[in-house]
Length: 497
Ligand SMILES: *Cc1c(COP(=O)(O)O)cnc(C)c1O
Image 1: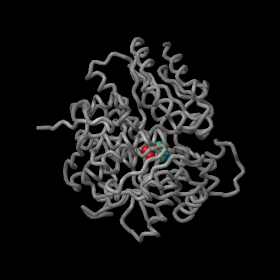
Image 2: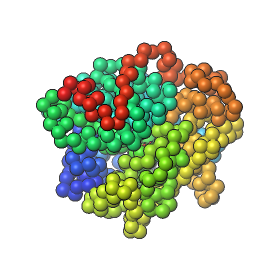
Image 3: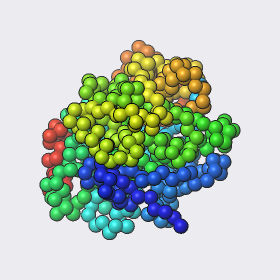
């Protein structure tokens, strides 16, 4: 008999909900994140997994976590998500360059890794709503540091019974990222620039989720909030799939032996992607180290080194904007597990984070963190890495991936660990053509993003992805901006509350 996996809140031991309920609510009522009460083991042997396609792997892994969805429901969500929107049927190809493999998670509609989960989540969410007889319009409220916004917009646009409102830091995203968002079609989409940084956007969105007065007015307007941010468990679970898939590809190609351990290096911001790798390891995937790569906003690097999480520092804008984050929300889930699934302890630490901007974990919690290694990459090292890898191998990577590639190079040099390693490649270089071209050809004066995209096409010898090709000729459909304290009124206006 199939056992249901329930989801607990990281801040309230008394709460436990089904997968579909967790997907619908996003956050739990007292501000906690939903976590599976147990992590299921892999459903079959590694060599059996090596015989499966991406979609088949997705079903085998996700059915173990999303236990209250039927087989038909899951298959329909998976079929709809991983279709021709991706430019390769492999979905997440592995590419060897230098001494490691790059797992390319940027073959979806917005050429960044968030497509992997956000092609799937809207379908899962509307399926969950139907299951629970929800008739209110689901309002997706999202704060983005660049890529989530467009991926969520692309995922939810035109999905019946939903509206999506995206807030982005108006000077904190690339020109291409901004154009991708403000040209978004779909009557149910709204995009608003905020005069502030990502944390300002995210904090205000979090406050709105807890605003009781706003909630009442939403209810009478037949709306309910949900979140497409990586705090939604429906974002996390689809990401476990590609860790398993990467392993099974290496095995299938004869690059590793069954059971041999591998490392993953993950360019990290909100800690969602790498946390999925942690769950894959707990399912029994032979993973040695999860190498957590930060850019100059190296809060996580310091945390893994010292056990103190301290966001009290200067916020630095880098060429890897999706990692310019000082509060990595998903770390709360790891903290909860490291504390032995202790909601009280987690709540205590998160209260300290809210009050003092920092907390220190006790020695007893460090054991669970030993699978992680933090690495940090400076702005100059990021550029140097893009240039060097291109020169040595002809392979071009984006700045986020370069942060990971350089971090891995340092890790390997310092530890001598030669375990086969997969670098998680989170964005197409075409999404950040300016930074990439300047790194490949220092001294490049060109400023126009679209000339730079053409230049990159010439230098790399690869075609321009459809997602950026015609971007500069599309009409701008969203031009609203606001100060952080105007975000609530903006939402009220859009919903007519
Ligand atoms: C979101 C994003 C990241 C960071 O992922 P997290 O899950 O937030 O850690 C890294 N690279 C790119 C390109 C992204 O869009």
